[in-house]
View 1 (spheres, rainbow, N blue to C red):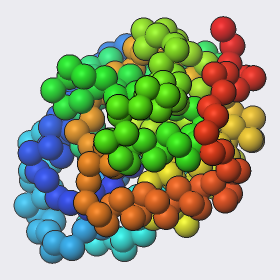
View 2: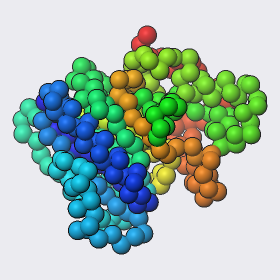
View 3: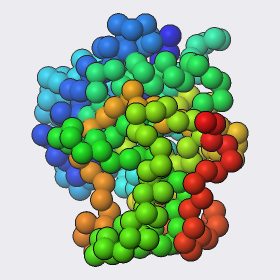
View 4: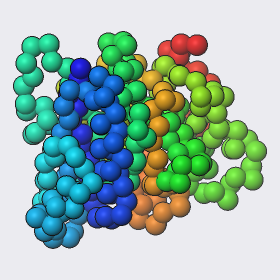
Length: 294
């Protein structure tokens, strides 16, 4: 069985969404233990927002909806999504040495994600199948559980990112087809898919060896593309990411193109850093990357 460490970073404190996240997470952990996949779990909840939260009140509220051990880190510096998660992973999770033969996985999760009951059990089971599996990418639905929003992606191009930022371009068929290819639209979301290129940062689960191998998130990405960069760097280290439709979550966020001008500027800045680091692609998005196993 596996020990699971969970890192959640909160910047905008939204109790209704956060506590639904924790309720569903607690139920999913319960199921993983019942299925024999999970030996222990700890939640690390880091807050890097502007409010001065009362620790006693927050702890009491969490105890009402989350039945597993947790640690509150309420006064964290705002180093962005990746940087604040790095603080938790490097200073707390990986600082604890495991006994010989013990297995540990790390889950990075957004505070606006609600795992389905079997999500964690199925993810841990999948990771046990093959020592080369990297991240297990989930099947993602919107907060209502009806509309799918693919979290696994192919390497983007400038054209497809422009399409996603400017939805007025959705009347151009060539760009619609390009975006569909970017989101693995040629592959059924009902089908297990090994060898996917990029994974959404809203729910990233992998062995702790992967985190040690790649050194965590690149903190040059304050927001956006830190997950894509991490996925690519771990692929270059030999890890093979997989999409598993049995790992289902609901996600209330996403849609950078529909957010404020500040978010859009940060998206563009991070995209520039991403392409400079990993290579520019103006238009084309190949259907397969050469490692995909049919």
